[in-house]
Every structure is written in C-alpha cells, then in structure tokens.
Length: 216
Figure (cartoon, one colour):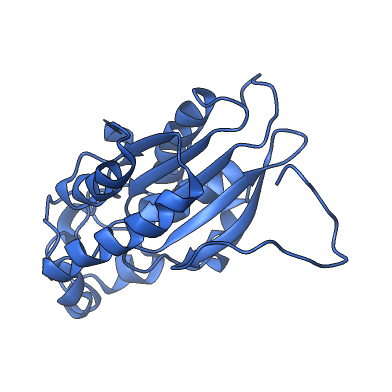
C-alpha cells in the first residue's frame, strides 16, 4: 500500500467484451484477438451504465479487445484512455489458441495445476496486475473513480493482490463474465473492500446491520 491519504476512491475492474475465441473456448492469453460484433455491443451497453458512476480516470490493457472496450466508455465520458502494458492478460505459453478440451488432453498434468507451459504463474500475474492497479490508484484524487478495462484472469488475480488475499484462497473468487465488472471501495485505513463482483448493473447501497464503512 502507498502512503497516499485515505479517501473514498472507487475502482471498477471491467472485463472486455466477447471475442470469437471466447465463443470457441480458446485460451487467449496475450494473443491480440479483437472483439466480435456481440462484444462491441456489450461494450457500448456497459459503457452507458458505467458512465453513471462518473469515472474520473480510465486505464486499459493495450490488447485490442480491452482497448476497444475502454474506448466505448471514453466515447461516452470524454475521458482519455491510458494504456498500461502491465494490464495485459496472463501469458498462456503453449496453451494460447487451444480449446479447453485440447489443453486437458495434451497437458493433463499442467491442466491439473492450471500452469501453462512457458506461461506465467498465478503469483506473477497477481503481482504484475496488482502493482499496475496500485499505481493507477495512487494518481487518483481522494474521491476519484477509476475504471480499468482488462482481462478475466488478469483482473481476478490483480484484485486478489490488492485485497490482500493469500494465494491459497484465490480460487474462491469467481471469474468475470464478458463485459461485467467488479467494484472496490476504499476503506478508512486505505485498504479495499469488494463492493460488487461480476456485476452487469450499477451497484446498489447495502443496507444491513453488518459493519458499516461510509467511505466504502
């Protein structure tokens, strides 16, 4: 955690829209696959919703599926898109371009531990993406809202990093659907709370007897 002053920052972690390889269940990794027509429509719909959160900064992976998703929000809000190479998807090594069935059949041992030959480990991705998220947050004012357009594995693992989850429980956090997002709210101590996960609608206030944190 940086030495920034705690505030009421929010971070919206937004997965890119659908691609042809998503439909075919192919491991994309760092391969630069574009959005398909459905993915473009998803991005436009999501952008209209996310604009209501009044984002103040927009950062994206430079891979075209994430960059095009971010551009849909830029078109609605007028925000410039900043690209960060550290937000790209997990390097899938030998798995890139293969279907899930092909991976299971050709690499059973590696599939069992979900470690692509020649690719990145989960810990490497978590640190890379988490550090990029922290860097972007540090540039936000105390009430800023950051939207990050990136990729499924990258965002899930980066989120685990900044939430401070130990690696042994990372798999308990489910993934993000195409063009869905998660929302993190800053807490009083400068840490983060998961407010919404894998959402496709705007977050609603939580009214309950649970521990209240007005800054979240």
